[in-house]
Image 1 (cartoon, rainbow, N blue to C red):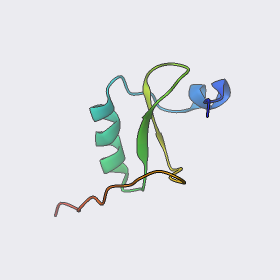
Image 2 (tube, helix red, strand yellow):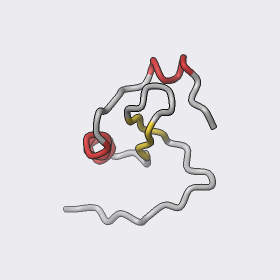
Image 3 (cartoon, rainbow, N blue to C red):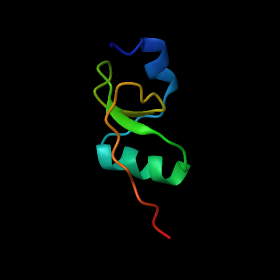
Length: 60
């Protein structure tokens, strides 16, 4: 599915996947990083339908 340009412009952009994952961990929400087919950078999404999700253990 292609990312709409208007959505791409509104989302935070991360140059590296690890930066996106760090933001994901800080948020405390169920988010996933993905490479945008418009800007070629990484965004975060809450959509998980049809995705294989690894269980992540919280670090306390």
